Image 1 (cartoon, rainbow, N blue to C red):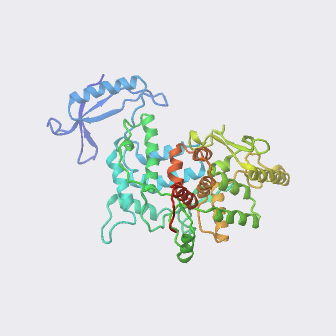
Image 2: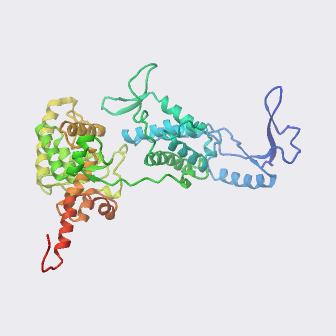
Amino acid sequence: MAKPTKRCNCRDPKTKKKLGKSCPLLPKRDHGGWWIRYEGPPGPDGKRRRPWAGPYRTATEATKDLQRLQSEADAGVPIVDKRLKFGAWLDEWIAGKRRLKDSTRESYVEAIRLYGKPGLGHVPLTDLNEGHLNALYEAMAQINRLPAGEEPGELLRRLLAARAAAPWVYARDESGARLPEKLAEGEQIGPAPGLKRQAPLSAARIQRVHRVLSSALGTAFKQKRIRHNPAQHVELPKVRKVRPLVWTTERVARWRETGKVPSPVMVWTPALAGEFLDACVRRQERLYPLYHLTATRGPRRGEVCGVLWENSDIDTSKTISLVESADEEDDGLKSDSSWRTFAIGDENAALLKAWRHQQRRERLAAGESWVDTGLMFTNPDGTALREEYVSEHFAAIVAAAGLPPIRFHDLRHCAASLMLAAGIDPKVVSATLGHARYSFTMDVYTSVMPDVAQAAANATIAIIPRSARQS
């Protein structure tokens, strides 16, 4: 086993090469550091590898670590590459995430391109620590929030430059999926979503970026590229919980006057949900069965777009089962509680029977171009629906009908609220929606519907025995 060697980073004034262990100042105690070299496992090409490690403050400290490193190398532990930068690792990591859905990959790529790489991409992966991540998130919080006249720091300048020079758009492939694509020089199609927004980044957005970087660092730790995961010890900004608000008559009137939506998460009353479904019928919307199923039973967008005919029984038990796909490229369900079977009711069953006949007619019309995916809801050629299209088309129907806006995901909230308003046991509602915790259902939805709250208030008052009541 080689002994520790004292080296420094001084350079020859003429050749500009590092002097290393030949520096004349090395005899001084405070000059240079101790380095060690050990026998690593052979590289992929079978060649011998003798990596360096250091610097250490003393020869004793270097000798102890040499024994540890040599033992790990003999046991087959991968050699830590100190030259690998965090940005290069993010590229390698995202390239290996082959099972991501298009929408998920887009959000990961955006987090990496706008924040991870410009902020910390230059830092060696092995040197990345909690301080680096905290500094990144502090700089992100200053975007569109820096006081007038105050100069941004170096890290914030890099983030702002990345946002200003992000000229990629999401092109569509043949199936309609969005793909990040660099714009040609001088082309003006439009920036990536959110780059021109003047609002500061929310705490939730910073947390989403952190989850991406944390996942990448977690993979690096599992592969022994780093010796600890700094993302586990970072204090993140607190996310304010957004609760659903119902579109009451007063809120609808105010929205019509000002155009302002009271909350990011809004829920229709039964009357407004009925107006939407009636609008779908009048417009003869092709995907009406999908919207009706979502509004009344509450499956998630990915679930309703990915459900297979073979996992449904619309003739006998009138149920749909959401189970994990055997496809390795599928992201799978959101959680274990998402694996469930729920009843769809008579009207949904009738709509799905008619839809099945329509899909068969479309298959005959498509002929050899039909793609047999086995999916319940498809495009006219049998291919899978693009999830973003389902949301975009839903928003177009809502706007055309003049209804107060909600997101497609809020149809799920509508279904939950409608079930509670209909007197369904909250435990049944929780199981139907696939919530991980029953308490979550109670916490989010029990106070949403005014009718439910009024019925509870009246029932409480009515139970008090009175000889006379004053109106």
